Image 1 (cartoon, rainbow, N blue to C red):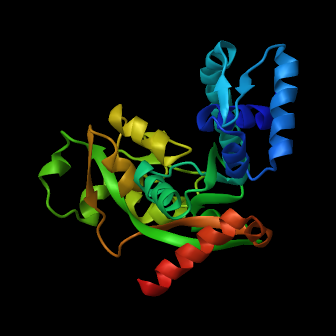
Image 2: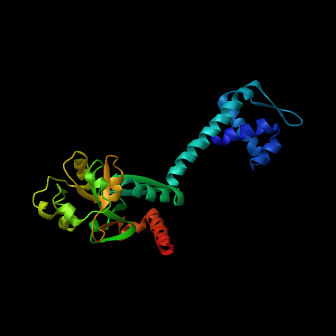
Image 3: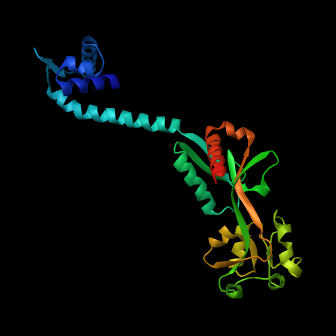
Length: 277
C-alpha cells in the first residue's frame, strides 16, 4: 500500500466516479482502475462496485477511508518536516566571553526576521562560521563587521558611597580597592585609573564577568563594560573620568566564511544597514 494507491482510493471514494477521479488525479481511466484493483488485491477485499453510472462503495471501503486520509496526512507532514530541515541554511555563531545578552539578542532578532530559513547554532568561545566578540580579539586573518561601540564604566555595589556621587574624579579613584585583569587585553588601558593600587589589587579576574562576581562579593571595584554591569541587580556604575574608554563589539569572520550562504546574506544585510545609518 503506497501513496499512489491511497490517493487513487480516496479520489474514487469521494467522487463515486472513476472518470471524474481520473481527471482529478490527471490519470487515464484504465490507469486509475488498475491502481485501485492492485490495492484491492493487496488488501484481499473489494472496495468498489461498478454501476452503469459511477461506483458504489463497500463497507470495507468505508472502514478504510478515514485511515487512508490519516495516512496521507501523516506522509505529507513527515515530508514537510524533513524538507524544511533540508531547506534551512546552517549558521554556527561562536559567542566570546563577556558579551552581554542584549547585544546577542539584537543580532539574533535580525537573523530571525530577515533570514527565517536559517538554522542557528550558538557555541561558546572562538568557534563557528562567525564569532560575536570584541574587535581587539580579532585574529590577524579575520575581517570585522562592527555592530556597537560600548563604553567601560566603574562598577561598584549599589550601596557604595559612589552611588551618591554624580561625577567621579581621578583623585576619588586612586585609593580605591581594585579588582584588576593582568592577563586581559584591556589591562593596560585601565592602569591610569588604578593609581597607587595598581601593584597591589584586592583581587584579580580573568574576565569581566568574573570580576563583577568579585565586586558583588565585596572585594572591591572594577572597570567593566556597561552592558555587563546593567545585568547585575546588586551593582551600579558611574562614567569614568576623562576621555571615554570604549570597546567595539561586532562579528569576526574569515574571508572563506562568506562561502556559507547564511554568512553572506547576514554580512550583506549588516553592510546595507551600516550604509543607511
